[in-house]
Length: 295
Ligand code: NAP
Image 1: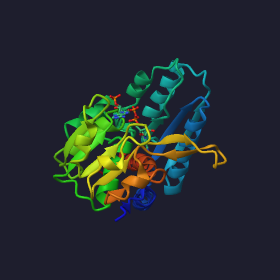
Image 2: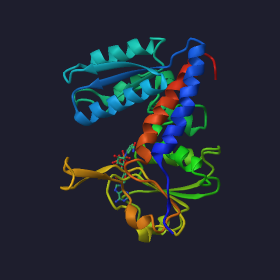
Image 3: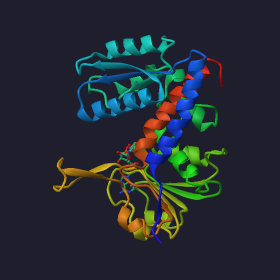
Image 4: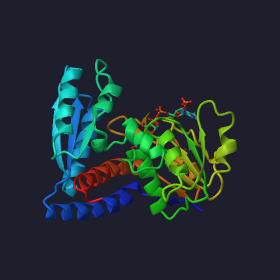
């Protein structure tokens, strides 16, 4: 039987509706959550990500402070703007769109963001707090993946989860969260990567397989257990001359074949993607509550 499609679009809409109500309640207390957005340069993909994030803020009532800087902006100028936002009470979250131009040290910039406004959850203070199970801003894509699993009714507690990919923004934090003794975790987690000897030997035992490699067809049907839940984080462009733009987006999973074997599967596009922005909105609202002693 074909798998149930987990729609990231629908789950994201659900969460955004909940956030819209929360923002309305905050506004009754004269609190408007604010997100400071910084884009350096003219990278077309970054421009479209930033515009999507600002539009999403607007739709749920979050104020966004848009800062589009030229590609020649110096590191010092950028650090100065971050410092200003760190001290601005109207700003609850700071988002610096990556990648930054080569002359700017990305790690230094991310470190300059006050941990209390680090709504991407990339600052080492938030990463450390997450690892030891303290309250922290959770990184948006991993948190989005967990919300998708939980809200689809798939059991995490005690589940065997295999994550393929160990990046700092997806695989590693996801593995950590899923292994935590908490309602977002309690799973038994295995992490696979390019040095794993036999990935299929692991994925075939998994109740939940999460692919985050950046390569199409990393997960094929013969690697998945009947009835498993398969979450595809990957976003890859492949040539498609039938499309006006000349390409289409696919994930890391061989969707058509795997959906015949799995019980649940996420599509690309319309899967994890919409969840990532939603969890950024979630963190911004949480930050506004924290700043006003409401948490
Ligand atoms: P990344 O930094 O390039 O990391 C890829 C990871 O996958 C690495 O750990 C690598 O192993 C592993 N890997 C690559 N090929 C593999 C293979 N054939 N078998 C096993 N492991 C393999 O990528 P990322 O930033 O985590 O992103 C992964 C994908 O998710 C990309 O397509 C990206 O566009 C997408 N993404 C989507 C969202 C979203 O919101 N939907 C957000 C973030 C990322 P090694 O460590 O051994 O090199």
